[in-house]
Length: 297
Length: 236
Image 1: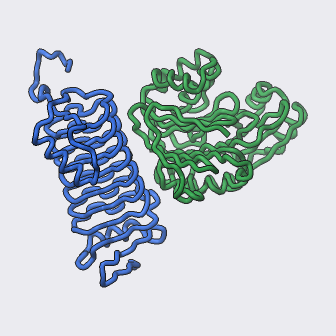
Image 2 (image 1 turned 30 degrees about the vertical axis):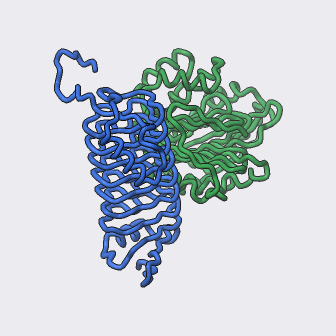
Image 3 (image 1 turned 60 degrees about the vertical axis):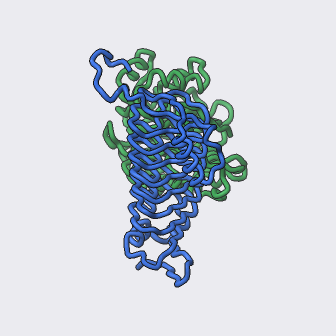
């Protein structure tokens, strides 16, 4: 069992409430996922060649200032913002160069996400603890994808927490379980993907991203997924300007959507949406199985 | 300390789940309800297990959306859900009435032995799975695999039915007004009898719905799965 939550605000002036509205949504899913939790927030896009790298290091004594010094010597327009054991590195240097340098010089630092809009935080602990540790309540932006995890098929570790990412400005969270993650991984590794965890969800995330890179629309990519994924899933996905939701053909895992003129909110259960402003007048519906739902910023 | 307002007249006892726990509510409902005609539940906000295992002829109004298993195992009570219901509403109901104003999620009325479940909106997948004698009336559509292995009772669908309707059906009878995407193994459309018209008219009347019984088709068991057939080679 896991909990998923997503929120997209429709009006620019509401973007400052994004994190404040989301935290009770995340905490509402504690019983579905008390082991670990994570959040991807999509913000105003960076301009030009600037990219953001959300980084994580398990070692709380890690010297982020040294990493910043090294990065500043090597790369252009470097900025680093640290939140406990996570940091967001901004630079205009080529993403592949930055990744390679981080991998070589700082193997203990994991790149959680890369893009012009996405920041990502994930860690073990109760959702309330993780939300407080990384100050989720202060997040501002256009949309969010969050997850609370109850581990069933791999260990409780920060890297096995969701959201998962691949490429740039793409993330996915999962409620359910896949029975064929090994074959998905082997297929994708042959195509050049590198896996960083042993959670079944990583394969799903990288598979859909691969299909999108091949030129599929999200709908086409998910139809391929229906054919190749063996298992149960409700997936919530984020791109730089979209939230998308899909449930497996048996609708094994729950999802409910509440939409008003101001926001679209998605959660595994209504109890995570009950606090939202004006939710009593929202259009509330249960997404149908095998249908792709998406909402744009 | 249970904060309840118990009026001498017929005013309902009010529980506010914004301030009180589901456990307080349910313990009250499981206690001596002599003199209590009605209970009103405010701010249910999708909480689980609201009004489960009630065994009293009391009216319970729930002023919003419920989470998993609302009114499960109900006996004799009339439970009115003014919003939508989460998974497993009225599962294993024995008697009484559960009435959902909005939609119901998966497994509505699963394994119900008796009573009447009315869902005025759509019902999700597996509605009435393993139905054992209860009656379910759905104002809208039902999702796939509804009435799977349903043994007794009735499922009335005023809208459309999804895939695999009535798969491995025993003696429950299904009435569908709209389209059926597909029938499950051993389920078949059968002629409506005068008894069917009478039963269906009574159920629609009990739910306060105005459709005419003649607009519906009957789905029942072909009874071919009742006996093992070695020659079928596992193909049904």
